[in-house]
Length: 348
Image (cartoon, rainbow, N blue to C red; front, side, top):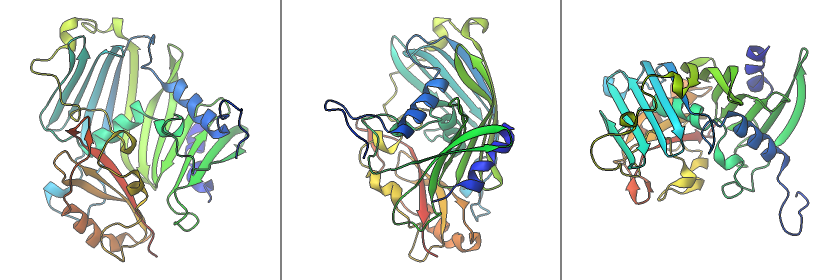
């Protein structure tokens, strides 16, 4: 039944709260986002130490190029995380020729990587694991008050579900670039859609009172971009997991911008948040559709790919144009950082 619901959101998505004198009452959709985040948050103070492993496969995107350097990095990979407390953890990624280890302990945060560029699919995986519900949807300090969400209740057969959706901007025609989330009545998150990028979380198991989906799928339309099988166990069951040596790396502390953690527009500097609502992909006349690209720490655009368009053939010139763009990278704590960007063209 959940697998059926997983495809339902795309098929059904369509285009002033009274305040207490001292505090504004949360919007009803905010409560849904907060509850889903709480159900899946493994990393709060007092949480049970764990060892998590994700075995994933990354699929290539539509890039309109035969040059190897311009392809989406794809293939098999693994992600492992040992988490003891919010200040004692280890993350490790192996993905083709890319290998990275990031740790934090009493001596600070350190990172070693075979490259100072994190592949697009690695960021995509970690986004689904670390931030299944974006923080700006439920944090009062980050929420955008101009966003208005619709809450709809329905059912697929005997299974009830709740859909929360919104338009991405008033400049769009109805039906374009929408955001939506699908929940069970209990608050369990099943699916998200962000500008035609769809993520499904299925087969959850309960670990220490939290929901851990055992299968993650990211796709655009009917095309898979990433699949992952996730396992989790108590950290004490892993040999050496609590060994202090496993939480240390040689060398100086990592620069703030050097991290496996996906960074977002609302936490970096030098990037206007309104840019995320730019509907122009490449030169004037780009066909309607959504695309994804990575802005690296040197200001270069990497791994540009078409997410969805009803006219994919017209996207080759804009994608080629995007690869040539260089700009000043955003920063976090004055350190250049990498960020994943999505864009939309609203041209007919």
